[in-house]
Image 1 (cartoon, rainbow, N blue to C red):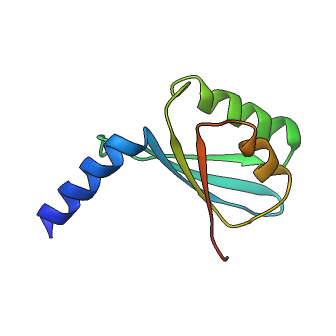
Image 2: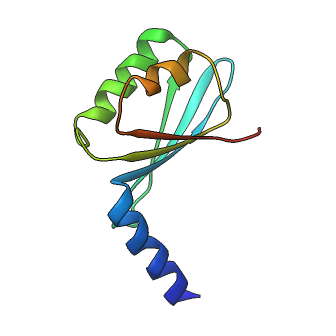
Length: 97
């Protein structure tokens, strides 16, 4: 099991700089971010407002300007998807809520 986890982390380190889980809601959104190769997990919440979404995306771009970031989120269309799609280094993984 530990060997499988280590192999998975090594694979992720090579493909993505960070992994993000985004829980979409009507009033606010919860974010879970893990930088690959690091065991620390960061949590953040922001309000459901276009300016807050854009601010979060801009902040996310600073530490990872040209590396791939995996974003797993509970939707396949909408303002957030369109905002994230404007950046080539975001790999989106929409899931069924």
